[in-house]
Image (cartoon, rainbow over all chains, first blue to last red):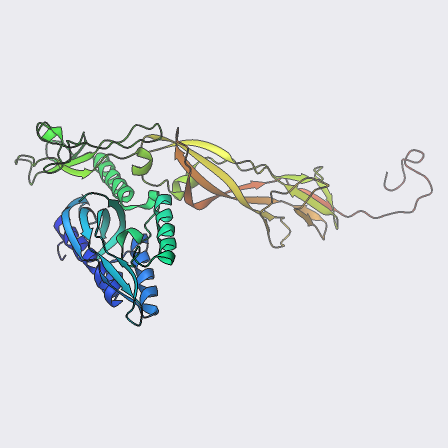
Amino acid sequence: MDQVSAAGAEAVATYFLQLYPYVYATGDLIEWKALSHVECVFCKSVIDNVGALHAKGGSDQGSEITFRSIQSREITAGYWYAVETALTEGPSVERDAAGQIVSERKAPKNFNMTLAITFVGKWAIRELDVVETTTG
Amino acid sequence: MGRRVAAVVLTFLFAGTTSTAYAASDFGGEVDAAADHDAVTMNAREAFSAERAWQAAAADPAVRLTEYQRADLCGVASADLSTAANGDCASNAGAVQVPACEGQVPVLPLWRRDRVAATVAWGAWRFVTGWSCPQDALPAFMVEDFRRLPLAPPVLRIQPDTGQVLVNLATITMTDPTPQLLVTALLGYPLEVKATPTLYSWDFGDGTDSLVTTSPGHPWPDQDVAHTYRAPGTYQITLTATWAGAYRLAGTTTWTPITGTAATQATHVPVTAIELHSHLVADDCTTNHNRAGC
């Protein structure tokens, strides 16, 4: 992540996506926000959803991320990078403040994602597209 | 985006009827950006700009260290993304999806190669961005460019329009609110720009505050923009119109709004406000054309 390169952008994308189950489980959004561009719609959706979940005392376990493939490429040297990944998100369980199961997703899901990542003094996820796929 | 929103709504409905269909953490349940601001489009735009900047720099081919080219993408199901310029595509499997672009010619994938010095062989062509539609890949049409377009200031009309108006009686002002269609180019692509007036600021030239309206004004007897001069004098009325813009590639149907506005200014020939006094007279102008007021 210290390297401003396609490899650095790939490391940023990997780290950011692995934060996803962590923020849902803990409500700790510090790192997520630090990497989210202020105009990133997907990033804000997670911030809003996690905030609402934990504000009512709930939490979410699961959503383990397994990367099936990941590629990165430099678009503008030192500034703009694209990352494409195919990943599997494991099952997840949402519990309320009392520990009761509110909802449960038992089947894993497969997604293709495209990330636009910028470096302006620091890395930022500019936007993230999610497309669910039926096959692994 | 619409499809994605529908999916979120359905998930929400299911959550009310069954406890097993929805869990809060689900990438597919998050809101993502609208199509023209999504990551794929942003990456395509950035690549397009990088290519154009390289073209504009026009570095000497003998010594330059970076080159771009647009070329087909070999099959994508195996190996790394490559192009025929790197060798035969025959060993690459899988289909390449070329987008439908509302009748526009899709933009070929972009490739880049580098070398560390002019005396060293070029590296292989590396994939920068895939097939895209020009309307997606083109950078946004900026408000600075919008402001440079020759927008015709709408004609400012007044009533009465005799060069003289009366003190203490309303002077009616109006203009033509018709949107204007202009043709320009964005990086070589023909572009249609539609300008629509949204706000009118009327300066009546007598030191009073400008009147700002969303109405373009209407002629008597339906007037809704008017000003009353309180003192005799000669005044120049100025109309500043604020224009909102939208653009599309010529031949496509979807307008994209321009962030920011343009303005035009129109002035009317100076008008003189006069004061009329009433006189009691014994005869009319036909019988005595020398009397005051005739």
